Amino acid sequence: MEHKPENIEGELSAKELEALNQEKLQWRRERIRKQTTAKIGAVLFSAWVAMGAISGTIEKGAGEKGRSRTSISEVLREKEKKLPLDFKWLTDYLGRSKRDAQKPEAKKGTLTNGGAIESRGVTAPRKEMVQTQEMIEANAEMERIEEMIRQTEEKMHASTLWFEYYPSKFAYRKGEESKQEKMGMSGPISYVEFVQWVKKRPEAMQKEQGPTLQGFELANIKSEEFEAYLKAAYPKSWLQHISSITYTNRAEKMGPDYGPNLQDWQVCGEMDRERGSIEFFADCKDPNKLLKSLSHELGHSVDWNKNKVMSLEERLQFQQKVLERVVAPDRFVSEYVESIRGTESPKEDMRLRAGEYWAVIVKEYFAHPPNYWNGGKDPGRLSPKDLELIKWFFAKTDPDFDVLSHKKAHSDYVATKLSGGTITPPKLFIQTNHKPNG
Ligand SMILES: [Zn+2]
Image 1 (cartoon, rainbow, N blue to C red):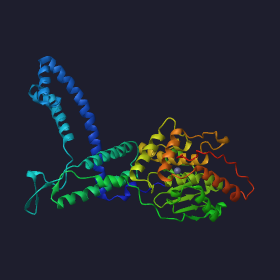
Image 2: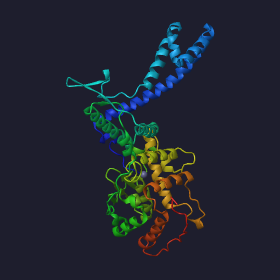
Image 3: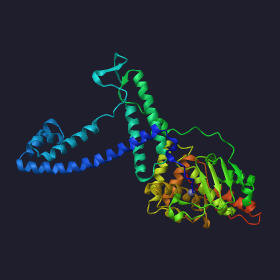
Image 4: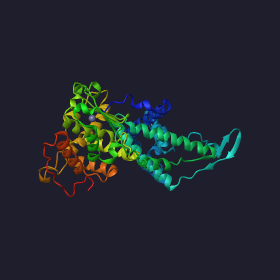
């Protein structure tokens, strides 16, 4: 499981939160307006046809439309006086919706009166900025990215990505506006740099040493041996997401965060994303169970919320891909993920399910890689779509990683360190095309 953050919104200032809520409100309004406009448009069109049939003005209306190239709603406005009162507000509404849609985004801090910008009583000529092809393309890209956020937000409780994207955009926009104002310019804001930032990957991490380990002796695990295993078994970028791993000889219950079905379940391990820490509890005292759970918890640490290797855009795509898998008919069915429901809201259910789904398929992938057992003939239990997702993930984060090296490190470690050298490691079936990205 993952440690529930105290308050996802907690990291934002009141101003940022207010701006976010405005953004959300605007989406809803926009959606309702589009739906209503479509409905009213259909009703109005039939009314117009019906009225035309009665008064014999259809041809005339169509003729007007052809001559002036105006839309149906504008033709209707011409005919407003002939329409019953009830239809008048409908035409107004339709016309207003259309005008709103065509209106460019409202620009704060710029004046549009008479082409002049007033500042401390001095009227200077205003320079108009021209929207370049690059700016048009950046805007289209941004619209695509924001559509992705909107679609996700409709299905699950807003994640950290939503709280990363919008404050950054507001800050950027504010900076651009004050730059424009200083230069006495008005016109479209250029989002070119902002979009570049969304697509840019973070600088490579320099951290070399692995996480600090504590309490493992209580589970009969030697820290140094465990550390060597971690380095040999997991992708390079993974351990850089974790600062500490602890074993505590204490039983821990899941509690109400994941819904009533799971509240009495024992917690084996827990990942705290804010602290970058993993903690194991008494339920995981068996080292074999602890090792399996480790893949799950490490999976959490590299998911879309805080992945330090991926760009923001890649993390958004990652989140969306997992969200699609959680509800897919051919998803990997685990009792654990399927039991998450009845939390504070269906969207919160979905946020938790998505996070756990990813951790669960990662654990399954490491424990039972496709084409590994049974002479390489066993395809494993994950659907091809899940394997595709994992393949996509490794291609972005650790393209050289081979799950076979995990299996080898795992069986060596279990055989020589955990069992005191009494167990023969399972025979490895080397597949030439084993890499997830191969
Ligand atoms: Zn989990």
